[in-house]
Length: 336
Image 1 (tube, rainbow, N blue to C red):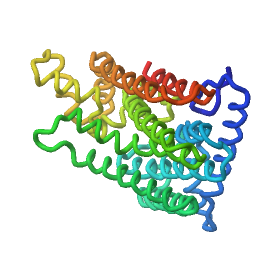
Image 2: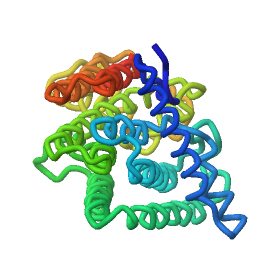
Image 3: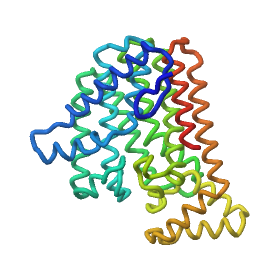
């Protein structure tokens, strides 16, 4: 058994391992090349997060999906660069919106420089991703545009919040589907499509990407409460400081409103207070870590991971299928 890539998927086939390592190395080189600029300052800002590393979850999914066609087809690596560039661009923008100070274990771009630099750098990365996808044909351009629309819509839905009468949990899941599921679904779709896999396989791997993307983000939400900043590279409780209610908090609010305990209501009141105060923030995190709704959020992440695994059933039993199932395990393990 070999662990491949920063995300740590287990691979039990030497030929698949070699393909993945070669592909991810080519993606890394492609990311560095795509973020180069003749303007030295822009070169520094654009490569800031590339050089900080990351899980490269989306490129890994592209490479695994491509195993169901020709993994060496010329569009596979560029498409993986496209999805990771797009993801990186959203991180620059997210950190501005969240006022985050750390990303991937290094100062965020907005903290190191300022908000304007971070926003413009994200725009630069979007433009570079657009240039690369244009070379992959009109279908790829359309797929990328649709995913980008879903991604932005998800962010706007999160910013606007649920409308009166909307179920906050359903709204949150819709936000996640747009912000995270859309691009991870495209990773599976690009890998299958650009490797020449048949239409049914492309559909299956798109659905797999959507479902594991949901699991991935729900696990991330759990880690925002439980995570170690030295391991995750992110400051825990960022969503709390920004007043963003993840599934744990949403279920706590529902429980408190529907006859929960006095302790539930006290914790909700604490969450609604000024969490820019470090002591209150730490107390809120401790309260959520001890609350049963955290286990409920973990269960939701596991449910989506299991659904992703089920989607794989019709695929042929090649080593890449087992590796994709291993991705489901890896996502689930992040919630522990």
